[in-house]
Length: 153
Image (tube, rainbow, N blue to C red):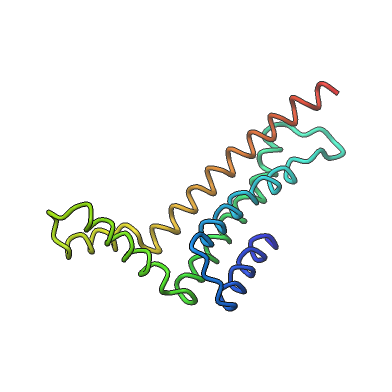
């Protein structure tokens, strides 16, 4: 789980250093999602004995699922206690775009819809769901590729 802690430590250091790149949080999510690839490959890496597909999947998911949960917990803690302005800033940006596009709707109604949809809770759940789906996908993909290539050689 050092990868999850390292990613969040880098984000925390960038926050403390005052780095405010517009796409920094998107880049952070990309790194978090990409870190699942070597994690699942390591989980199914060939061992001394030949394992079944189910055992390979189980080994990969034993690494990927705790990583996913830990990353989401760390993201939640980061945005809840450290960078509290992020979601309000993003909500205001979404609200301004919505006001420009939908002049017929009430501003208070739009604000309520934006704050209900783009919240820390929803963000955390969506990231967790994406990480879990990617964990299962990568585990199955790399376990299948392992079987395909090891049988040929």
